[in-house]
Image 1: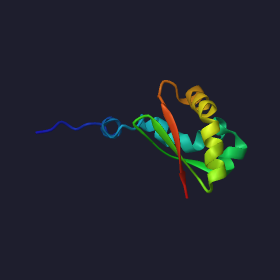
Image 2: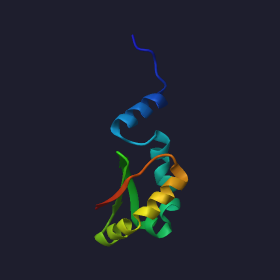
Image 3: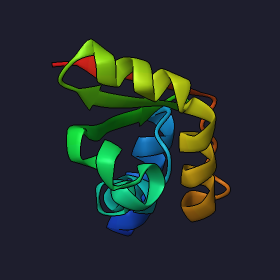
Amino acid sequence: MYEPVPLAKGLERYFRNLGAPPVNVVASLANEWESIVGPALAAVTNPVEIIDEVLTISCNDSAWASQISWMETQIKDGFYQIFRPTKIVQVKTKIG
């Protein structure tokens, strides 16, 4: 028979198996998004997911996708200021 496991531990294990960061990072990312990328970029983008240390950001057009690409280092730095030690090795975009 299995011993009961606290829900938080189960979620952490599930997220880790998916290659996702800790639950608290996923839960807080949308709320911290403007602090990470600034108000202008936050108004036209949204964080979609972090899987296998890749942050995917959605935006509505290719101009913003280019802006995200140019700002990859700054986005990572902003992310680390809030969510260290969670690691991001790449930032990619999803248009639509």
